[in-house]
Amino acid sequence: MVIAVPDSRDEEFRKIIDQVAEICLSKEFDDLRRELETIYENNNIKNALLTAFQDALYSILAEKEEARKSRMLIY
Image 1 (tube, rainbow, N blue to C red):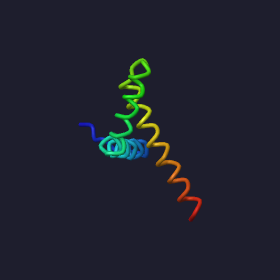
Image 2 (spheres, rainbow, N blue to C red; image 1 turned 180 degrees about the horizontal axis):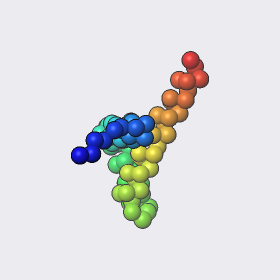
Image 3 (cartoon, rainbow, N blue to C red; image 1 turned 90 degrees about the vertical axis):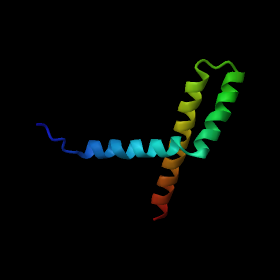
Image 4 (spheres, rainbow, N blue to C red; image 1 turned 90 degrees about the horizontal axis):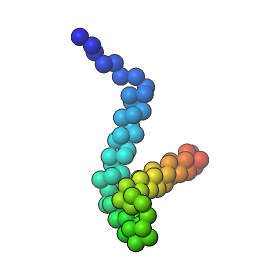
């Protein structure tokens, strides 16, 4: 029998997965994704739906990271 022993990578992956899931279920993400989909489809961007999803996710992740860094500088 194999028993999984969590390591620091597992914990880091879990944190990332939790953060991404929280973002993807948010109204902010859904609104941004839909807005980008419309813009990309109107401009004939290849893979508009996927690209909009990726760009919305990246944008919110980057925003959260900047906010985290700003809080660190304040303290």
